[in-house]
Length: 100
Length: 167
Image (cartoon, rainbow over all chains, first blue to last red; front, side):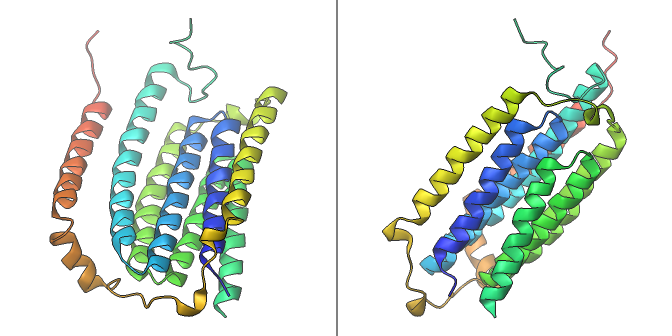
């Protein structure tokens, strides 16, 4: 039988994979996709807790999280496009204007 | 039956998530991310959050990923395939990943998280009517704040993508 610990396990593994991708990859767009993955993993944990608790507070919270994530993606991608227009690259290694 | 679906979709979600991290081509990574979001919508259905499963498919797999693919194809970055990841980056990422996995094991081996699924409370109030009722009574202030947040982000995106000829 599937219990809460299975869902929490999947959710935290997805979060760990997203974290791994943020640390490993150099492309800003891939890093941003891994951030979305981490956000979604947190959503899964919230829904699992809400289901096994019996209330619906977690579900409403996930609804707000999805809304905020959609707004965040729009703004973040606009920033990436503006950055690309200025520097002609999306690799984080070359975006070192604040270094030194 | 639920167990089989849970294992299928969670393995699919984890495999697609690894695909996002390891794919050399960014478009393939975005496709893998769509697969992850779809599998997570299926997991939401297993958790009886039907409305959120639909929202997940519409907003994430639909709108957000279309925006991502649009930007990926607009920027058309090709040089990431040639770049080598240094051994230090690999080591640091693997250590971070390992620490997180240890945390997962520690959380899941705790006694307090082990649930007795036999006396699981019946999910009440997750249908759409109660959802809307809760949104406009208990959570009215967060709802309005979210509306303003969407307005602010819209203005921000327009201000960011406007072409400035200041110099």
